[in-house]
Structures are given as C-alpha cells and as structure tokens.
Image 1 (cartoon, rainbow, N blue to C red):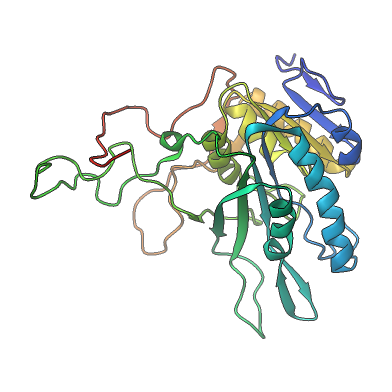
Image 2 (spheres, helix red, strand yellow):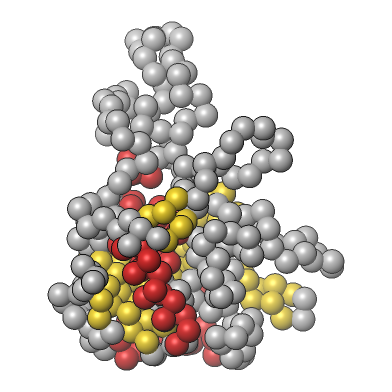
Length: 316
C-alpha cells in the first residue's frame, strides 16, 4: 500500500498530483503563488508523436499562454526553469530560447542564468555540426529568491589546494564542500542504453532536475511541471522531500509517471547516480553502478555528508 498521497486532481493534501489532460485545465485549479519551482521541457515543435507541428509564430503564442499562467502560480521567491532546444525547419535551426526569452522579460521576470546542458550523444548531422547541447533559462520572479548552493556543489578539481602566500597562507583556497557547478552542465542525456530510459523519446535525466530542485527549493515546497512526460521532475522532487504537481496529455506517459513514482517508493526505481562522472574511454577505473532510489519525505540529501567551515575572505 502506498504511503504517498497521489491524486489525479488538484488536492492540497497530496504529495503528487498527476493530472492526465491539458495543463490549462490544471492551471485553473492552482492558486496564485502556490508553487516554488516551475521546471519543464516543453515540446519543441519538431513533430514528435506527442505534438503537432505548427507555424513557429503559433507555437510561441501557445507557449506564452502557458508561461503567463505559470508566472501567476509561482511564489514570489520562486524560480522558473524552461529547458528548451532548437526548432528545425528545412535544415535551418532556430534557437527556441531566443524566441521564448521576450515572453518572460515582458512579464517582469529576471534571468539569473542561461544554463547550457551539454551531452555526448544525439543525432548525427551531415550538413552542419551535430547538436550536443540544449539550454535551461532560469528566471526568478523577484530579487528575493531561494538558492541553496551548498546542496549542489561538485568536487573541486584540486580539493587540497591551499594559499601559498598572504594572510591566508596554508588555508584551503577552495570551498571544502565543493565548487559551484557553473552554468555549463555536462550530464548524459537519456538514450537507448541509459538506465532511466522509458518509451518517451525526449526524457529528462533525473540528475538534471535534481540539481534544480535542490538549489531552488526547500523541503516541503511544491515543484510544478506543466509538460510532465513520464514524471522525472516529480521523482526528483519527491526524492528530496518536496511535493510534485504536473500535467501530461498522453495516457501512456501519465501512467508511466505514476508507475515510476510507485517503483521509487518501493526502492525499485534505478537511476544514474549524480556522483558518477561522465564516461571517459581512457578511464580504467570502476564507475559507480546505477542506484535504486527510495523516496524520502524527511528532507533533502546534500552531495557531501560532511559540513565544514569556509571563509570567503572577501566582503559580502
């Protein structure tokens, strides 16, 4: 029996709201300033099975309608992360983030980062360089927003490096908790041999959304995905004690989202661990194997267990 409260309709008591249907109908039920994080990867208008290819002007208009409502339901200290790629028309690419940015700007949101998500695998091009990146536009509603850097630090390149002169001689020159991951993220995308692969053709890796959930929300916050697919954003949220809400129009994907959450609750869902480095054919060591995750409603799990004291040395 499930310990999570999973609902197909908007319910304040739920842990996971999985609305099968048009996100516009779900948005009508969500109160103003209700969610702390909106994170999604909308259709790219490239003719996948879950979308109908339309004129680019109409596509942008459709996106604007959803974005306006997402801003309405976003908490004043919340964030929106719109992950998007390129629209391709007759072998010409149009970067969708360039077309989408003016919508957020017009609504008064603040762009904090244009995060480049790079990955090593994808379709091979013959008349241009093969595309190996997509973009996450991270906006905040105000200048007072949640940002938990310590929860997403990555290992320092030189962890034991110390200042060799000056007033801080002998002290660690880098934060012992790890370094800022920067705005270029090298995270494998979900392809055929990826442990998280389902039937969805354009699936988020859990690690990508995890980094956003941990840095931009606190335990107990609501995470909303208006184009939820197979529920990766919900899994990333629930793993770390957040609540999840999303919409999906395809029955198969909506069903898979619920199944993946149930599997995670039972400890049967396998994911790629975020501590595992990107594959390097020259590396002769042993890589961390996939892990089975167990949903934990007690709070977030930081990348490093030990906490340390770190002096910035500069003015705040």
